[in-house]
Image 1 (cartoon, helix red, strand yellow):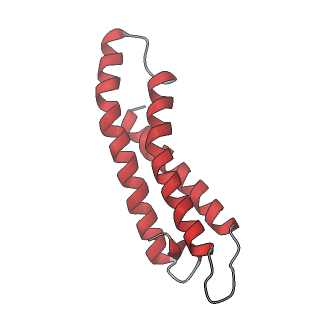
Image 2 (cartoon, helix red, strand yellow):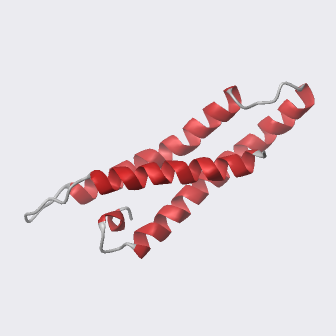
Length: 108
């Protein structure tokens, strides 16, 4: 399986975890609720963790044992990490706009 596909799947899984965390944060009433800031912060924490965790896991766990294939894997790994980050941000933005009146609407 290519690094690019694994990166996209990993980004989708991390985004799903961000959705679950955002939905778990309760609404706060009052004039100055802090729950939108908490949801936004968790979204961006996962945005930072996504490429970092993917790169570390892919580099140390999934790299091939063949020397030639390993070099190709490492070369494509950086691009795949960036693609995964962009996919996470774009899908998060889309979800934020689709559910703009819900808990996910606080991400952006």
